[in-house]
Length: 202
Image 1 (tube, rainbow, N blue to C red):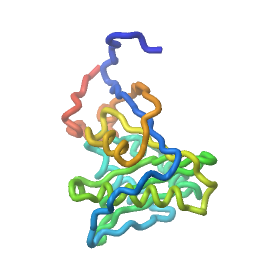
Image 2 (image 1 turned 60 degrees about the vertical axis):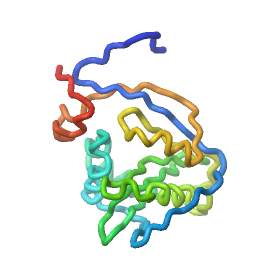
Image 3 (image 1 turned 90 degrees about the vertical axis):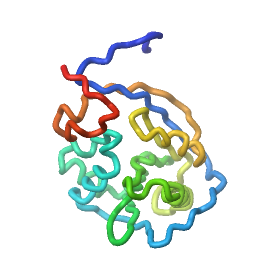
Image 4 (image 1 turned 60 degrees about the horizontal axis):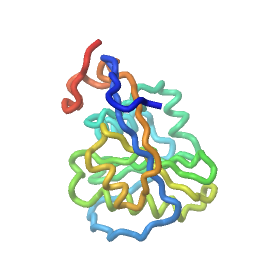
């Protein structure tokens, strides 16, 4: 248990408040914005370099780093797992969004990664993508039936993320504090990344 009041975070570390959310049944479907020229394509056993490029273009501003720091063989093992689905939002032949669904826990699906590149934000593509994620999870027959669809977001993510998930039908169920090494000081991301989060050097 964390004590009430302030707790110092060591230099060289980051701290985030994580909110876990879930849905236990399909929500009422939100209106689907038209997205001409945009498709969602499943990437079967995607190339690690292709995946990392997309992951970095979407998440670097929010200090996504876990999949960049991972050994290539370990990441390939995840991406090639039969109960992991990677889908890419495609526009003009370029991947501009990521939907990663993790069905490895029986009876549940984690929305492991969900995001768009900066070029795709603000035009309704996020809602369009979430509609497809929800449809896929609750209608799929490839994996065990799902009774829980869940996701987590944190205070380092886009400020719009938490509200977006709630509007999409997820319900907050748990709050955690995560402390971890600043990936910029480890060389996983450039030091100029995410200037909104200052680096505290040891």
